Every structure is written in C-alpha cells, then in structure tokens.
Image 1 (cartoon, rainbow, N blue to C red):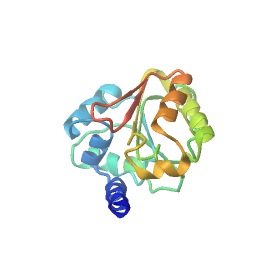
Image 2 (image 1 turned 120 degrees about the horizontal axis):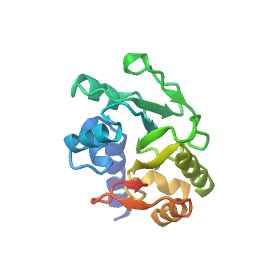
Image 3 (image 1 turned 90 degrees about the horizontal axis):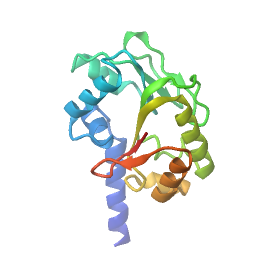
Image 4 (image 1 turned 60 degrees about the horizontal axis):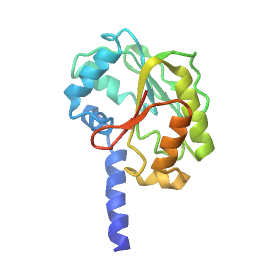
Length: 191
C-alpha cells in the first residue's frame, strides 16, 4: 500500500512540475477553464493597465501564451529565485525570494503563484511562511487578491517544510488576510 501511495504522490508531483501553460495555470489557480482565468485577469488588471505579480513565475510561459495565442496584453511581473530570460516586450523578470519582495508597498492589484507556495525552496518553514505572507500583504493594494496554488496537501513537497493547511490558514488569518479556497480546494484565495 505504501508504494501505491508513493506512486500516486509521484504522479501528482509530476503533473505540477510539468509544463505549466495557460490551462494548467487556470486549473491550479481555481478557475474552471482558461477563459474564466482570462476574464479575471482582464478585470483585475483594469484591462491590462495595472500589473499582476507572478511569484515563482518561471520562464514567462504564462505571459507568452497570453500574448501570442490569446492576443491579450497584460502586465505580468515575473518573480523567481533564479535568473530568468526576458519576457515579451523585453520585460526583465525580477530575481529574489518571497521573504524580501523588492517592490514598493501597494504595488500590485493581484498576485498569482502556481506551485510557489508549496515549494520548499521558497518557503522552508513556518517562520519563512509568516515573513513571506507579511511581504505579500505589504505589496498588495487595498482590496487586492492573491491566488496561491496548489493548496497545502495538493502537492507532497509542502510536507518537507512542515507546513500544514491549518498552519497556512492560521498564519494568513493572523496577518489580516481573509482566507478562502476555490471551489475545488486547489488554491488559496487571500484578500
């Protein structure tokens, strides 16, 4: 039975680590499909005027797919640990870690993260989680929304840091976030 459990966990992790295109982003961030995600992006960005922060943004795959295939121009600031290639329109990704976000207060109308919150390289323990969520609160504009997926328990790697679903929700709530999960329980929605 244990090997079956390991095998299931391995398959689930492989899905989350695979190429994360628009459809995958949409599902992990709690949207029914990519059209719903696109509608949300357009609404949240004031039709592309206001920037969205993509924590753990990877190699700009989401922004590229939005621009090239859907012909949607949104301002997505990609943020990650490693140096990343330039995005569309020569936008340079920002390098750093979640505990020291190099942005001014109230910089973003929304924040998204696909698999960042569950990656031990981003969040190593509960103290890092508290600092990261404090930084997230600081850079979000009043009334903004953060969608962080997948929720704890949806990826096995979070167990390596000792963070549980309850701990995540408790810390976020203590910091003043209203915490919900999407209908399928795949992502946290912080407001």
